Length: 119
Image 1 (cartoon, helix red, strand yellow):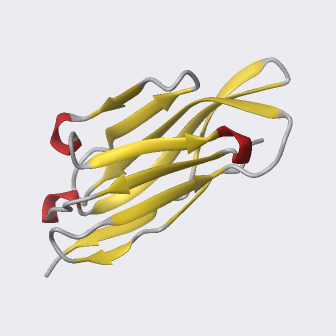
Image 2: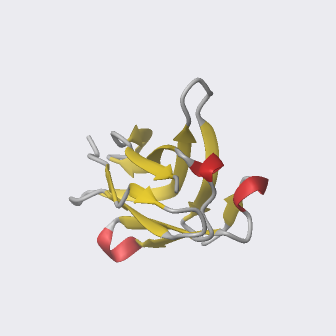
């Protein structure tokens, strides 16, 4: 089992910034892909950004140029830097990792962190 924990959410004014952190403490596994998803009230969960072990990144169009995903594999930690936040970015943000452990790949989710963009 890989335990995933998000942090860094909060209330911010439009135009502000937040940095989310996704931590997967422990050893004995390798994180292949790390991704951030979000779910706003009444909406389906959507992909925000992903980064592979090789450093390839992918973003949903609505956050391109404003959000940056990164990871520190030595710490099994990932980040989502969010700049120029807009009210429509308000959602619960979830970290998802695809990790290999004992030769088996599994997706793991965190519990989510709330991001609210409001004046």
